[in-house]
Structure formats: structure tokens, C-alpha cells
Amino acid sequence: MFTGIIQAIGHIQSLEQKSGDVRLTLNSADLVLNDSDLGDSIAVNGVCLTAIAYTENGFSADVSRETLEKTSLGFLRQGSPVNLEKALTLNTALGGHLVSGHVDGLGKLISLRNDARSIRYEFSVPQPLAHYIAEKGSITIDGTSLTVNHVDGNVFGVNIVPHTRDHTVFQFYEINTQVNIEVDIIARYLERLLTGQSATSEHSLLKTLSESGFIK
Image (cartoon, rainbow, N blue to C red; front, side, top):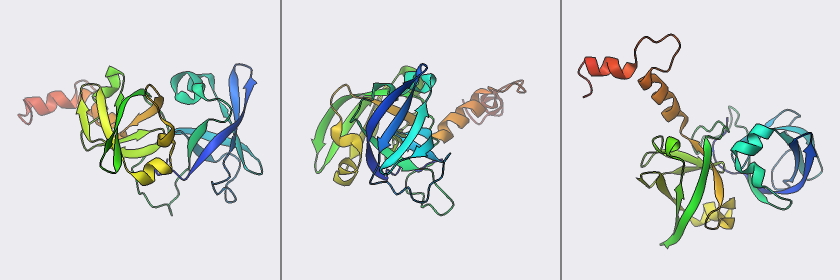
């Protein structure tokens, strides 16, 4: 688990093809790794990866074909900047929200404009993801924990303050940039409860609430 508070910007040092998938080596000199072990989880643009080796200035991680196809990691090239965050511990301040590092889908930047000293970014997402996104709810974009400012169909907006922009890969985004989206984990489980998507459920919680008069 992660918090969505980015700890450093790293850069892709190399991408080594490995029988259909890829081994990434990252330069992450600004990320403190002297307390990390082999097998530790590190989020790279919001994707939970396992560190398999450490170098003088960073670490390496294997990326499966599934992850390459379902996330923006498949678009990375040598030199690409990425957001980095180590997994949280019991001593970690939960400054963002609980983030699993399991990407739900890709979003696309469709507009950005100045909004006082911050910048308003608008993203479109696939329709199946749109109903998980709520105004003033939490969302993770490339591993960054953010608050949704508005929602209009499958488009939502977030405001990025100067500190966040300067310390994340948001500073490199251009129109049509594709980003990793992880919706609020609570929204995912709430949907499962409400729709009764369980092998042991004979009827949904939503139906029970409706029959009891709590919802119409």
C-alpha cells in the first residue's frame, strides 16, 4: 500500500527486453533507498513494482506483459521521468489516501489552464471507470493522490498547486498524455457490496435496501 504522496522523480535508465516483458532500471538518486531490501514494493507512476536489484543510484524491477499493456509503463522510454513512492509502513504519515498501486485504467489529458496560482488539469477516462469518480472524492493519477474538483460524464478535473507540479511528473504533461488512473479503493468495494457481486450472494445489498425503504 501507498499514500499517493510522491517522494521523488526518477528517470528510466534502461529498458531490457526479457522474453516478451521488460526489466526496468531507474535512476532514483533522490529516493532514499538505504533502508530498502530486495523484494520491497516501490510505486512507479502509481504501479506497484518489486525491487529485484539495487544500483548505486537506483533500482531495477521486472514489468510483466499484462502491466505493460494495461498501464502507461508500456510507453516509457530511456530518460522518461516517473513518480516514485516507497510502500508505506506503520510509521508513515498517511498524508494522501490509501493507494494500492493496482492501476484501474488509463486516462488522457484533454485540457489544462491556469487557475490563479494552480493549474486545472482535465482528464477523460473510459466510461466503465467514470462512475467511480466523485466530486471531492479521492483519485490517484500516476501515483499522485488528488482531490477531484469536478466531474462531467467521463471527464474530471483536478487542481495542481505549484508544489505538486514542481515535485511530480505533472510538470511534463502535454495534451493527450496518457496517465495511470487508480480510483478510490472504497468506491470499488462499495460497488461490489451494492451490486451483490459475490458467489454466495442470492440477492444484492442494493435490493435489500430498496425493499426496506431506505432507497428508491
